[in-house]
Image: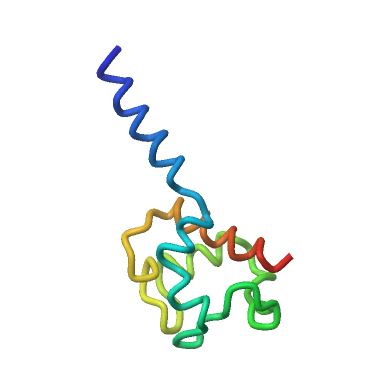
Length: 95
């Protein structure tokens, strides 16, 4: 039983850490708060118009593969799950 409990606890702790706002504040904000390298600014609806109409998976793919001046994985070691959480948080800010 102990052998399965530890991996389960590790998985749950990773899920708990994958909070969109926390991820945004630790990785994404440095460009998206200030519009550095033409990054659309957080919460600026007019800068997100062409992006917010896209499927969330397409936006996640932009981050994973890199888009424009943004390097793959936003230059970090984020997982795809964490990227999805951050993208969702950013899109949610437009509503």
